[in-house]
Image 1 (cartoon, rainbow, N blue to C red):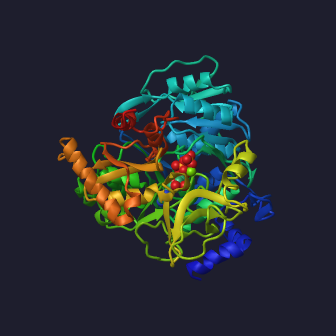
Image 2: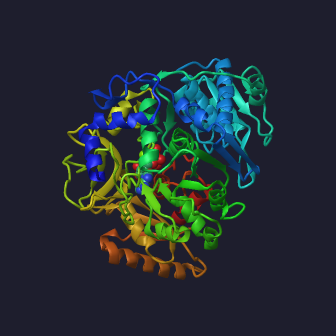
Image 3: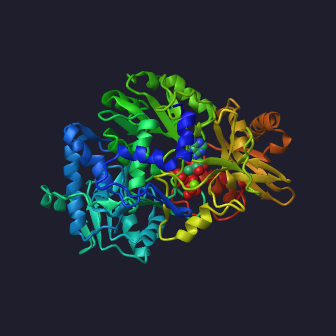
Length: 630
Ligand code: ATP
Ligand code: MG
C-alpha cells in the first residue's frame, strides 16, 4: 500500500487503522472501543482500555534492554554528563514516585513542574505518569506572574522545582520567582519539592518546602507499581506558548497519546529500539513532552536531554553529541538553525554525522535559505513538520517511514495519517478543494489520538475557541492559513490573526516577510499590521541586516530601506509594500524562538505590549519602541 492508500484508510477506516497502531503499545486491559465520537467535538480514544505512559516509556524496556541507555543528560552549563540506563531510570522514577506519594499526591492530582533541563525534571514527569497524577510542566523561562496564573488554573497539590537554571553560564534563580508566584496565586500547593543543584542559595518555607536529595535517600529501594489508568485519563496539562493571547491549558489523555507517539516514532521519526534520539527543545514545550521524554522512550530509544546553548562552548556542540552518542534522529527548530547560521559553517563538517538519518525541524515556517544552508552543511536530509501544542504530534510532514516522498522547499509536507486536513474559506466555511487556493487550515473531527481532549477545566472554551470559528461548521481550526498544491503538499502562509488589511487588500504578513528575506542582506524580519487612519492598516517591517556595517547614517538606512521595498514591490506588488522597513539588531522572540508579532504590533500602535514573560531579549522590543517613538 502506498502512502495515499494508507492515508485514506486512516480517515475512512479510522477504527481499524488505529486499532492496528494501538498494538505498538502495552495495554494492561484491551480497549473496549477504538473511538467514541458520540459527543462531538469531544473524542474518546481507546476507552475502557487501561495502560500507563510510564510503563510504556520505561518498565516495558527494562526486560530486553535494562542496561542500555535510556536518558542521556548533558549540561554544558554545569559540565555534567550522565547516562541513565532503562533500569537506572526505572529506579529513579520509582524514588520520585515514592516521594510524591509520600507528599500526598494521588491519582488525578496535579503536580506542577517548574524546572530547568535536568534529569530530575524527566523523573518527575514519568513519576507522575506512573502514579496517575497529572503533570503540568511550566517552562523555566516564565516569571512569577505567568507562573502564578498557571498555578491558579492547574491547582497543583505539589510543585516540583529547583534552586536555579543556568543560561550561558549565568545562574538564573528559580526559587524567588516560585515563592513570589505562590504568594500571588489564590491556590497554594501543599508542598514544594526542591531539587538543590547548589547553584543559588534559597529561603525555605518551613512545613512546605521539602528537600529532594534527603527524601530520595529514604526511598532508595522504592518499588512503586504503575497505576493502570483508563486510556482517557488525563496525563498532563500544558499551557500553549502564548504567541496569541491568554494561555490555554491543553489537556492530553493517556492511551491515545501513547499510541500516537509510538506510531509517529515509527512512521515519521524513524526511531528504533537501541538507537538515540536528540531533540534540542525544552521540556517546557510540547516538543519536549512528545519528543524528548515520551516518544523516544516509548520507542525504546535513548533520549538526550541537553541543558545549554547551541553555540557554547562552540557551535559544534550539538554535532559532537550526534557523533558521540550515534544519534539517529534529531529534532530542532528553524530559529536554532538561524543561530548556528551566524557561526562558522565549518562546525557542521567537523564531526562524523553518518549515524544521523534526518534532522526534523518544526515550530515555525522553515525558510528556503535556512533549509538549504543546514541541508548542505550537514549533508543529511532535513524534514520539516507542522503541528501545534494542541495536537501533540505532526499534522503535516513527509512520513518517511511509509514512503520516500521528496520534500519541497517551503512546504512541511502532506497531511499525516489520521488528520483529516481541509482548507476552508474563512467567511463561508466552504471547502476549497482546488490546488493553490488559500484557506484556513482546519481538521475535521474527531481529532486523531494524542490530540488535546479539552481545555483544562473549561470544555466550553475548548468548543468555542477551536471549533466554532468557521461559520456553519463544527470543525477544528488551526488558526493558520495554508494552500495545498496539486501534489497534496501544504504551504503554511501564516496565522489567521497575522493577516493585515491594507485599504481592503488582505495580505499575509508571512508572505511579505518571505519576500523581504529574499534580499541577500537580510538575516531576519518581522512584519506586523499597524492601525492607520487612512488605509485601515499598514504593514510595518523590522529587519535584521546580515551586514549592518554600511548603515552608518540615516541616508544609508533610507537607501537600503528603498532597496528592500523594491524587492517586495517586484515580487508581491506595490500593495504589499510596507509603510516602513526599519533596521534592528535583534527581533523580539519568545524563549522558544517564536516571533512576538503581537507585542511588536502593540508597541507600534502605542499600546501596552502585554504579557512579556516569555521574551528572550527585552532590549529587542526597546529598539522597536525607540524607532517608532513610543
Ligand atoms: P499560542 O497558541 O499560545 O498563541 P503558539 O501557537 O505559538 O502559541 P505552538 O503550539 O507552540 O504555540 O505553535 C504552533 C504554531 O506554530 C502553529 O499553529 C503554526 O503557526 C506554527 N508552526 C509550527 N510548526 C510549523 C511549521 N513547520 N511551519 C510553519 N509554521 C509552523
Ligand atoms: Mg497556537
